[in-house]
Length: 151
Ligand code: RP5
Image (cartoon, rainbow, N blue to C red; front, side):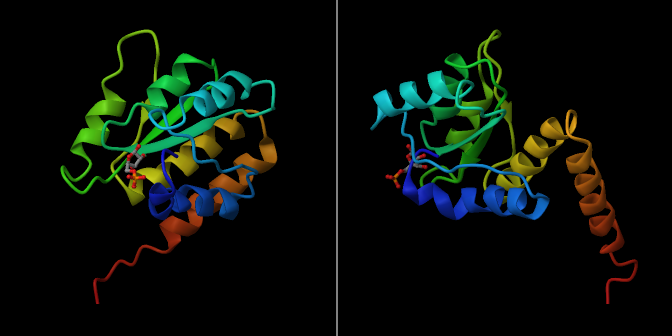
């Protein structure tokens, strides 16, 4: 994530991965304030064994796209809600990539962070049968938890 201030949003991705038993690491990596850290993180990601990168940032949110430009790993972008523009700036910064460097862009804020965790798990589950079973169980529990009556 681009800032410690993004953690309140991005912790929902981490909690989702915890629930599904997916290992991850968390880092603050700013495209603007720590560009060398971003370069080092993205260029070494595959060799360090990472399989998917979830990149959350707000405002002029260059982090996901810049990360994607420096690794062949799938990058999922979470637009963090900004104070000035409610995350529309974040969303458009992340989603509108030129053809050739994809970023899988999620919804603004908490729902996007949760779904980034779920989507990362789904990607990993294509080569991990045990994780696929946990993911299916999680989804079944979600379905079972939806009431038929509003009261
Ligand atoms: C972005 O600027 C970060 O991703 C964050 O969402 C936003 C504001 O950062 P702070 O000023 O709170 O550190 O780079």
